[in-house]
Image (cartoon, rainbow, N blue to C red; front, side):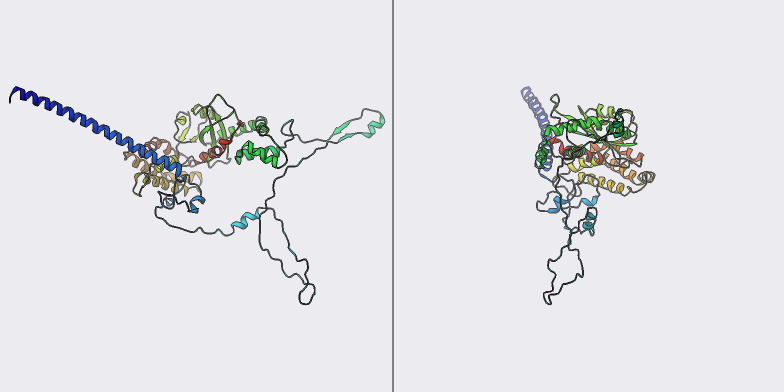
Length: 461
């Protein structure tokens, strides 16, 4: 081979190596793009499901599509994770709900009863024209009547008394006046019952101020919305702050607590785009149920740290990092959040062999097993959990460690493994529970009405 041919061959070899290297890089780039595209498609399907799909986490019919005309789909209670694998039925079956006997009588038994006896105006026999006698009285039906609310003006008169004998004798005449109950707030005609009703309407029934304004106007006593808000603020300052302080001390004396947080916009706070409302609650097996809401300027862990101070018990929470560095507390994870990650990771057309679906199933089995222990004493529940729940928890996390995945399934696996230590802490005391649903339900009540909040009633600083 000539020198020229050798040089040409070397150039060809060098060019070929460059092309092979470029091909390798392009394959890597294509693989990365495919992964990104797969993740984006998965995210689009997930967001579409969240936007247009059913809001509950289980379906008794087709797992991939809700039936718009299925009335049971809209009447069944919302699932929060505390359910067994029996809810994960992929076959389509229709079962009629059994009627509960005696339910109507039980509901009516707690109401005041008013009897209406219906009689004939003329009780003359059409045959002989003699007076007919009563032979029976039969209950035909029961109906519940609604008596609309009304507003009354209650006037309080004070009587003054003087001693007639002292007046006759010319000595100083003593006077005495009858006592009159004080109003909750000065310079207003609002009674405690009226203020309490506006609070109930706003914070429990989620009726905003402008709707209440129209409502009270219809009842014949117009109350401006700013007056309602002022009542709530002043009443909280005068009465509720001291009560919440006592409740907080009682809460800190408990061995088990729950915590959760959510975004909260205070419209009259112009300096902050959004704040956070924190909830601290006693545990499921506490003698007293206490919920305390605390407004925080941020989602920083300093809020629970300052509120709980030197608390050294157990604290249920989700996997938010703000709970990571709370000194002296034993953190308990939430299996419902772990389950939800696997539920969200299930593909659109999943099957019973889906890895994500198996994660949901394993979590359901743990919930069902723990639910069977709810009627036991604290010590008995502790022993039974070590015997029954601990092996299943360990098997669940061993299964998670054996998996390798990316996307939402990978997120679910990593989240579960990151919560492993906290989740195993549930075995340390029989008063602990598998989920943080107690606080989730408490914060949900606030979330339902936060879009209508005009001013915040601060119950504790």
